[in-house]
Image (tube, rainbow, N blue to C red; front, top):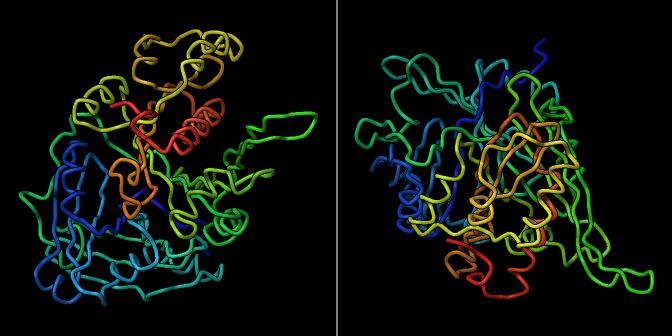
Amino acid sequence: MVDSLGIVGYDSFHFVVADLERSRRFYAGLGFTEVARASASKIEKGGEVASVFGAGQIRVLVSSPKRKDSRAARFLRIHPDGISSLALRVGDIQATWDFLAARDATFLSDIAVDEAPGGAFKTFNIATPLDDVTFRFIERDGKYPRFAPDFEDVGDGKPRENPHGFATIDHVTSNAYTMLPVVNWYRDVLGFTHYWDVEFHTAEMAGGRPLTGSGLRSIVMADPQSGVKFATNEPMRPFFRESQINRFCEDHHGAGVQHIAFLVKEIIPAVEALHAEGIQFLKAPGAYYDRLPRRLEEVKITNVKEPMDALRRNHILLDGADDKYMLQIFMLDAMAMYGDEKAGPFFYEIIQREGDRGFGYGNFRALFESIEASQREGSPALEVVG
């Protein structure tokens, strides 16, 4: 009996949007290459257009409805633009199926196989506790020549070198009103193990009683074989409804994927180049950088090679301990970026790791306060850079 899912790594993720051309411009700004498109027969059969954008090992499938009976249209009748499916690469699709069947996974399809010269594409998908988000498992046997069945390559089907250094997915983070069903599902169905957790609240006190503020709990679960990681956040009382986690769920109309983190080798030049492309980021408060030298001393980080003035200027956050650190920054969510609620509350993170494998424990509060400041102002341009 198999003892793991046999995950090799992230394969791709499926984003459903109302405006594919807007997404095409956005990914071009991130330096992604359009590597594939849905064939005419697939568009006719499914009632939606789709393109695949790539950078390094990252693949983003973006689809948009052409007919009201398409899956994309049904998703958008419930949710704003957002992720509908996360795909994981596995080494043996049958072994993955057997592992999940023994753990009572809810299957949404049988194993589908597409044979092509040089290899085969094998896949199935399952339901998750994240409302309309599904998980797909894919085995690419041999040298399967396409992104997926009924997709056609754009050019040679390979991404150009990404100018910002985007190469791999570091982690995926989801928000839910309550996270235990999600976390327990990662453990009991997928066989993941506990990797990291944090909880905090930004409560402001008056007379010994909380006056305002909000908080979160977050647990990261990881596949013990591949190291693939999924974080889940939930709001924390008091003031549950003021939490930006709760706000996400309201804006998304349910639980869903909040952000995906792209790993880079050098974050400062990446962020500066993205600024020039018009990409906007959340702005960290100046007090964060005023306190940073003392905080680094407290957590025993003495080897930061990046200039502090460049971190401050670009609003990049720093965290870690014992001379292992990481740098991170968060893009503005899509609904704020476009001034369009239907664009959804999803955003991307950029992360550089210098030995630290955590998720920015000391930065969670700064991110939380930055998002909430943007929401309070009601004018994202005052709270972002880029």
